[in-house]
Length: 353
Picture 1 (cartoon, rainbow, N blue to C red):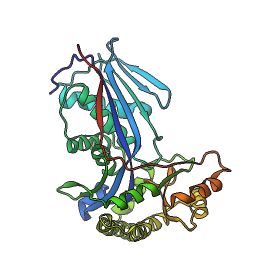
Picture 2: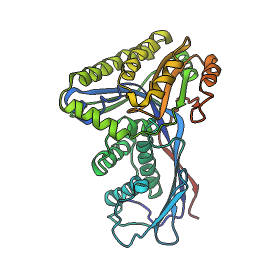
Picture 3: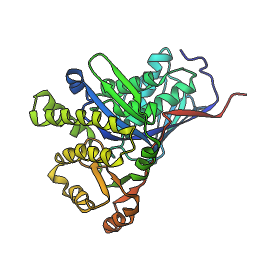
Protein backbone atom coordinates (compact mmCIF):
# COMPACT_ATOMS: atom_id res chain seq x y z
CA UNK A 1 0.00 0.00 0.00
CA UNK A 2 1.01 3.60 -0.50
CA UNK A 3 2.88 5.10 2.45
CA UNK A 4 2.06 8.71 1.65
CA UNK A 5 -0.81 9.83 -0.57
CA UNK A 6 -0.59 13.51 0.38
CA UNK A 7 2.82 14.18 -1.11
CA UNK A 8 3.65 17.49 -2.78
CA UNK A 9 6.82 16.19 -4.39
CA UNK A 10 7.33 15.89 -8.11
CA UNK A 11 8.66 12.68 -9.65
CA UNK A 12 10.58 12.63 -12.92
CA UNK A 13 11.12 9.22 -14.49
CA UNK A 14 13.38 8.16 -17.35
CA UNK A 15 12.88 4.78 -19.04
CA UNK A 16 14.93 3.48 -22.00
CA UNK A 17 13.64 2.24 -25.34
CA UNK A 18 15.13 -0.94 -26.79
CA UNK A 19 16.67 -2.64 -29.81
CA UNK A 20 16.59 -6.39 -30.37
CA UNK A 21 19.49 -8.45 -31.71
CA UNK A 22 17.40 -11.58 -32.13
CA UNK A 23 14.50 -13.77 -31.05
CA UNK A 24 11.67 -11.30 -31.63
CA UNK A 25 8.38 -13.17 -31.94
CA UNK A 26 9.47 -16.08 -29.74
CA UNK A 27 8.42 -13.99 -26.68
CA UNK A 28 4.80 -13.98 -27.77
CA UNK A 29 2.80 -16.03 -25.22
CA UNK A 30 1.17 -18.07 -27.98
CA UNK A 31 4.68 -19.24 -28.98
CA UNK A 32 6.67 -19.45 -25.75
CA UNK A 33 3.95 -21.21 -23.75
CA UNK A 34 4.24 -24.17 -26.13
CA UNK A 35 7.80 -24.04 -27.49
CA UNK A 36 9.73 -21.79 -25.11
CA UNK A 37 11.10 -18.44 -26.24
CA UNK A 38 14.39 -16.58 -26.04
CA UNK A 39 15.32 -12.99 -26.95
CA UNK A 40 18.50 -10.97 -26.68
CA UNK A 41 18.07 -7.20 -26.71
CA UNK A 42 19.52 -3.99 -25.36
CA UNK A 43 18.16 -0.83 -23.83
CA UNK A 44 19.37 2.29 -25.64
CA UNK A 45 19.86 5.98 -24.90
CA UNK A 46 16.47 7.01 -26.27
CA UNK A 47 13.82 7.47 -23.61
CA UNK A 48 10.29 7.93 -22.43
CA UNK A 49 10.14 10.66 -19.78
CA UNK A 50 7.26 10.84 -17.31
CA UNK A 51 6.54 13.49 -14.70
CA UNK A 52 3.99 13.02 -11.90
CA UNK A 53 2.86 15.86 -9.65
CA UNK A 54 -0.10 16.72 -7.48
CA UNK A 55 -3.00 18.52 -9.19
CA UNK A 56 -4.42 21.32 -7.04
CA UNK A 57 -7.58 21.35 -9.18
CA UNK A 58 -8.61 17.95 -7.74
CA UNK A 59 -8.74 16.30 -11.16
CA UNK A 60 -6.63 14.00 -13.29
CA UNK A 61 -4.77 15.84 -16.02
CA UNK A 62 -2.77 14.06 -18.72
CA UNK A 63 -0.32 15.99 -20.90
CA UNK A 64 1.20 14.34 -23.98
CA UNK A 65 4.03 16.78 -24.57
CA UNK A 66 5.38 15.01 -27.67
CA UNK A 67 1.95 15.26 -29.34
CA UNK A 68 1.11 18.68 -27.88
CA UNK A 69 -2.17 17.31 -26.49
CA UNK A 70 -3.76 17.35 -23.05
CA UNK A 71 -7.01 16.28 -21.42
CA UNK A 72 -8.65 16.63 -18.01
CA UNK A 73 -10.65 13.82 -16.38
CA UNK A 74 -12.94 13.94 -13.36
CA UNK A 75 -11.83 11.66 -10.53
CA UNK A 76 -15.25 11.78 -8.84
CA UNK A 77 -16.67 9.24 -11.25
CA UNK A 78 -15.50 6.10 -13.00
CA UNK A 79 -12.92 6.74 -15.71
CA UNK A 80 -13.56 4.97 -19.00
CA UNK A 81 -10.74 4.18 -21.36
CA UNK A 82 -11.98 5.33 -24.76
CA UNK A 83 -9.51 7.75 -26.27
CA UNK A 84 -6.58 6.05 -28.03
CA UNK A 85 -4.15 8.87 -27.24
CA UNK A 86 -4.66 8.50 -23.47
CA UNK A 87 -5.55 4.82 -23.09
CA UNK A 88 -2.18 3.66 -21.72
CA UNK A 89 -2.01 6.55 -19.23
CA UNK A 90 -5.57 5.88 -18.07
CA UNK A 91 -5.05 2.13 -17.85
CA UNK A 92 -1.94 2.57 -15.68
CA UNK A 93 -3.70 5.15 -13.50
CA UNK A 94 -6.63 2.78 -12.91
CA UNK A 95 -4.44 -0.28 -12.34
CA UNK A 96 -2.23 1.46 -9.77
CA UNK A 97 -5.40 2.64 -8.03
CA UNK A 98 -6.76 -0.91 -7.95
CA UNK A 99 -3.52 -2.60 -6.88
CA UNK A 100 -2.16 -0.15 -4.32
CA UNK A 101 -4.55 2.70 -3.48
CA UNK A 102 -7.75 0.91 -2.39
CA UNK A 103 -9.35 1.99 -5.69
CA UNK A 104 -9.12 5.66 -4.73
CA UNK A 105 -8.45 8.05 -7.62
CA UNK A 106 -6.02 10.79 -6.59
CA UNK A 107 -5.69 14.20 -8.30
CA UNK A 108 -2.41 14.21 -10.19
CA UNK A 109 -0.90 15.63 -13.35
CA UNK A 110 0.78 13.10 -15.63
CA UNK A 111 3.10 14.51 -18.29
CA UNK A 112 4.89 12.23 -20.74
CA UNK A 113 7.31 12.58 -23.62
CA UNK A 114 8.86 9.98 -25.94
CA UNK A 115 12.02 10.32 -28.01
CA UNK A 116 10.45 8.06 -30.66
CA UNK A 117 6.89 7.82 -31.97
CA UNK A 118 4.61 4.86 -31.26
CA UNK A 119 4.91 2.48 -34.19
CA UNK A 120 8.64 3.07 -34.60
CA UNK A 121 9.73 -0.45 -33.66
CA UNK A 122 11.64 0.53 -30.51
CA UNK A 123 9.09 -0.73 -27.96
CA UNK A 124 7.64 2.72 -27.38
CA UNK A 125 4.19 1.86 -26.02
CA UNK A 126 5.56 -0.77 -23.62
CA UNK A 127 8.31 1.59 -22.47
CA UNK A 128 5.67 4.26 -21.85
CA UNK A 129 3.70 1.75 -19.75
CA UNK A 130 6.75 0.90 -17.65
CA UNK A 131 7.65 4.58 -17.23
CA UNK A 132 4.13 5.48 -16.08
CA UNK A 133 4.01 2.64 -13.55
CA UNK A 134 7.45 3.43 -12.14
CA UNK A 135 6.70 7.16 -11.90
CA UNK A 136 3.33 6.61 -10.21
CA UNK A 137 4.58 4.00 -7.73
CA UNK A 138 7.51 6.24 -6.81
CA UNK A 139 5.17 9.20 -6.39
CA UNK A 140 3.06 7.22 -3.91
CA UNK A 141 6.09 5.63 -2.19
CA UNK A 142 5.18 2.13 -3.38
CA UNK A 143 8.12 -0.27 -3.60
CA UNK A 144 8.05 -2.30 -6.82
CA UNK A 145 11.05 -4.37 -7.94
CA UNK A 146 12.12 -4.59 -11.58
CA UNK A 147 10.50 -7.95 -12.25
CA UNK A 148 7.18 -6.83 -10.77
CA UNK A 149 7.38 -3.54 -12.68
CA UNK A 150 7.79 -5.35 -16.01
CA UNK A 151 5.14 -7.95 -15.13
CA UNK A 152 2.50 -5.35 -14.24
CA UNK A 153 3.28 -3.44 -17.44
CA UNK A 154 2.92 -6.64 -19.48
CA UNK A 155 -0.40 -7.43 -17.78
CA UNK A 156 -1.79 -3.94 -18.44
CA UNK A 157 -0.90 -3.96 -22.13
CA UNK A 158 -1.62 -7.56 -23.03
CA UNK A 159 -4.51 -8.50 -20.71
CA UNK A 160 -6.16 -5.25 -19.63
CA UNK A 161 -5.89 -3.28 -22.89
CA UNK A 162 -5.71 -6.38 -25.15
CA UNK A 163 -2.82 -4.91 -27.13
CA UNK A 164 -0.98 -7.53 -29.15
CA UNK A 165 2.69 -8.11 -28.50
CA UNK A 166 5.33 -9.98 -26.56
CA UNK A 167 7.14 -9.33 -23.30
CA UNK A 168 10.67 -8.32 -24.27
CA UNK A 169 9.97 -4.57 -24.34
CA UNK A 170 8.70 -4.36 -20.76
CA UNK A 171 11.63 -6.28 -19.28
CA UNK A 172 14.24 -4.38 -21.29
CA UNK A 173 12.73 -1.09 -20.13
CA UNK A 174 12.68 -2.18 -16.49
CA UNK A 175 16.17 -3.72 -16.35
CA UNK A 176 18.28 -1.80 -18.89
CA UNK A 177 21.47 -3.08 -20.49
CA UNK A 178 21.91 -6.15 -22.69
CA UNK A 179 19.68 -9.01 -21.53
CA UNK A 180 18.80 -12.55 -22.44
CA UNK A 181 15.09 -12.98 -21.78
CA UNK A 182 13.74 -16.54 -21.69
CA UNK A 183 10.14 -17.58 -21.22
CA UNK A 184 8.06 -20.74 -21.09
CA UNK A 185 4.70 -21.76 -19.68
CA UNK A 186 6.00 -21.74 -16.11
CA UNK A 187 8.71 -19.12 -15.90
CA UNK A 188 10.13 -15.86 -17.24
CA UNK A 189 13.83 -15.26 -16.58
CA UNK A 190 16.08 -12.25 -17.19
CA UNK A 191 19.85 -12.57 -17.33
CA UNK A 192 22.17 -9.60 -17.80
CA UNK A 193 24.74 -10.53 -20.43
CA UNK A 194 28.44 -10.42 -19.78
CA UNK A 195 29.96 -8.70 -22.79
CA UNK A 196 33.65 -8.51 -23.64
CA UNK A 197 34.73 -4.87 -23.12
CA UNK A 198 36.27 -4.44 -26.56
CA UNK A 199 33.28 -6.13 -28.22
CA UNK A 200 30.92 -3.87 -26.22
CA UNK A 201 32.66 -0.78 -27.57
CA UNK A 202 32.59 -2.12 -31.11
CA UNK A 203 28.84 -2.84 -30.92
CA UNK A 204 28.21 0.66 -29.54
CA UNK A 205 30.19 2.23 -32.38
CA UNK A 206 28.37 0.12 -34.98
CA UNK A 207 24.71 0.77 -34.12
CA UNK A 208 22.72 2.99 -36.45
CA UNK A 209 19.00 3.73 -36.81
CA UNK A 210 17.41 4.97 -40.04
CA UNK A 211 13.87 6.32 -39.83
CA UNK A 212 11.80 5.12 -42.79
CA UNK A 213 9.19 7.87 -42.52
CA UNK A 214 6.51 5.19 -42.20
CA UNK A 215 4.52 4.63 -39.01
CA UNK A 216 3.00 1.18 -38.79
CA UNK A 217 0.50 -0.65 -36.60
CA UNK A 218 2.62 -3.23 -34.82
CA UNK A 219 -0.52 -4.90 -33.45
CA UNK A 220 -1.71 -5.72 -36.95
CA UNK A 221 1.62 -7.35 -37.85
CA UNK A 222 1.77 -9.26 -34.56
CA UNK A 223 -1.79 -10.54 -35.01
CA UNK A 224 -0.77 -11.97 -38.39
CA UNK A 225 2.16 -13.73 -36.77
CA UNK A 226 -0.01 -15.02 -33.91
CA UNK A 227 -2.54 -16.39 -36.36
CA UNK A 228 0.20 -18.22 -38.28
CA UNK A 229 1.44 -19.75 -35.02
CA UNK A 230 -2.12 -20.72 -34.07
CA UNK A 231 -2.76 -22.54 -37.35
CA UNK A 232 0.73 -24.08 -37.16
CA UNK A 233 1.95 -22.55 -40.39
CA UNK A 234 5.30 -24.29 -40.80
CA UNK A 235 6.77 -21.34 -42.70
CA UNK A 236 6.39 -19.07 -39.66
CA UNK A 237 7.07 -21.72 -37.02
CA UNK A 238 10.33 -22.72 -38.71
CA UNK A 239 11.25 -19.03 -38.86
CA UNK A 240 10.69 -18.59 -35.11
CA UNK A 241 12.47 -21.84 -34.25
CA UNK A 242 15.45 -20.60 -36.27
CA UNK A 243 15.41 -17.19 -34.53
CA UNK A 244 15.45 -18.82 -31.11
CA UNK A 245 18.34 -21.11 -32.05
CA UNK A 246 20.21 -18.12 -33.48
CA UNK A 247 19.88 -16.22 -30.17
CA UNK A 248 21.70 -18.98 -28.31
CA UNK A 249 24.46 -18.83 -30.92
CA UNK A 250 24.73 -15.06 -30.42
CA UNK A 251 24.91 -15.40 -26.64
CA UNK A 252 27.99 -17.64 -26.91
CA UNK A 253 29.72 -14.90 -28.91
CA UNK A 254 28.91 -11.90 -26.72
CA UNK A 255 31.71 -12.68 -24.27
CA UNK A 256 34.32 -13.18 -27.00
CA UNK A 257 36.19 -10.55 -28.94
CA UNK A 258 35.12 -11.85 -32.34
CA UNK A 259 32.92 -9.09 -33.76
CA UNK A 260 33.01 -10.68 -37.21
CA UNK A 261 31.50 -13.97 -35.99
CA UNK A 262 28.87 -12.16 -33.91
CA UNK A 263 27.74 -9.88 -36.74
CA UNK A 264 27.75 -12.80 -39.20
CA UNK A 265 25.45 -14.71 -36.83
CA UNK A 266 23.23 -11.65 -36.34
CA UNK A 267 23.04 -11.16 -40.12
CA UNK A 268 21.63 -14.68 -40.58
CA UNK A 269 18.80 -13.82 -38.20
CA UNK A 270 18.09 -10.41 -39.72
CA UNK A 271 18.27 -11.57 -43.34
CA UNK A 272 15.67 -14.24 -42.57
CA UNK A 273 13.40 -11.62 -41.01
CA UNK A 274 13.74 -9.32 -44.02
CA UNK A 275 12.23 -12.01 -46.23
CA UNK A 276 8.89 -11.33 -44.53
CA UNK A 277 8.85 -7.63 -45.45
CA UNK A 278 5.59 -6.73 -47.17
CA UNK A 279 5.69 -5.83 -50.86
CA UNK A 280 3.48 -2.83 -50.15
CA UNK A 281 6.48 -1.14 -48.55
CA UNK A 282 8.89 -1.37 -51.46
CA UNK A 283 10.54 1.86 -50.25
CA UNK A 284 11.86 0.07 -47.15
CA UNK A 285 13.22 -2.80 -49.20
CA UNK A 286 14.80 -0.23 -51.47
CA UNK A 287 16.61 1.49 -48.58
CA UNK A 288 17.93 -1.84 -47.30
CA UNK A 289 19.08 -2.77 -50.80
CA UNK A 290 20.80 0.60 -51.36
CA UNK A 291 22.77 0.43 -48.13
CA UNK A 292 23.78 -3.22 -48.52
CA UNK A 293 27.39 -2.43 -49.39
CA UNK A 294 30.76 -3.18 -47.82
CA UNK A 295 30.90 -1.96 -44.24
CA UNK A 296 27.21 -2.58 -43.52
CA UNK A 297 27.25 -5.83 -41.57
CA UNK A 298 23.54 -6.46 -40.87
CA UNK A 299 20.28 -4.60 -41.47
CA UNK A 300 16.65 -5.16 -40.51
CA UNK A 301 13.40 -3.41 -39.70
CA UNK A 302 13.22 -2.96 -35.93
CA UNK A 303 10.15 -4.38 -34.23
CA UNK A 304 7.18 -6.20 -35.69
CA UNK A 305 6.94 -5.03 -39.16
CA UNK A 306 6.59 -2.74 -42.08
CA UNK A 307 7.75 0.67 -40.92
CA UNK A 308 9.45 2.60 -38.15
CA UNK A 309 13.23 2.37 -37.87
CA UNK A 310 15.72 0.28 -39.81
CA UNK A 311 18.36 -1.06 -37.41
CA UNK A 312 21.85 -1.21 -38.89
CA UNK A 313 25.16 -2.60 -37.66
CA UNK A 314 27.88 -0.92 -39.70
CA UNK A 315 31.36 0.51 -39.83
CA UNK A 316 30.90 4.04 -38.38
CA UNK A 317 33.25 5.44 -41.03
CA UNK A 318 30.73 4.75 -43.82
CA UNK A 319 27.83 6.65 -42.19
CA UNK A 320 28.54 9.64 -44.42
CA UNK A 321 27.95 7.40 -47.43
CA UNK A 322 24.61 6.26 -45.96
CA UNK A 323 23.59 9.88 -45.34
CA UNK A 324 24.34 10.71 -48.98
CA UNK A 325 22.09 7.85 -50.16
CA UNK A 326 19.23 9.06 -47.95
CA UNK A 327 19.54 12.80 -48.59
CA UNK A 328 16.81 12.94 -51.28
CA UNK A 329 14.08 11.87 -48.86
CA UNK A 330 13.41 14.38 -46.09
CA UNK A 331 11.48 11.80 -44.06
CA UNK A 332 14.61 9.67 -43.67
CA UNK A 333 16.98 10.61 -40.89
CA UNK A 334 19.54 8.73 -38.85
CA UNK A 335 20.20 8.33 -35.13
CA UNK A 336 23.34 6.87 -33.58
CA UNK A 337 22.11 5.10 -30.42
CA UNK A 338 24.22 3.68 -27.62
CA UNK A 339 23.66 0.86 -25.14
CA UNK A 340 22.09 2.17 -21.93
CA UNK A 341 22.82 0.09 -18.84
CA UNK A 342 20.23 1.54 -16.44
CA UNK A 343 16.61 0.49 -16.42
CA UNK A 344 13.62 2.64 -15.52
CA UNK A 345 14.50 5.07 -12.72
CA UNK A 346 13.08 8.17 -11.10
CA UNK A 347 14.34 11.23 -9.30
CA UNK A 348 12.57 13.60 -6.93
CA UNK A 349 12.73 17.12 -8.32
CA UNK A 350 10.70 18.68 -5.50
CA UNK A 351 10.01 17.33 -2.05
CA UNK A 352 7.80 17.96 0.97
CA UNK A 353 9.16 20.41 3.48
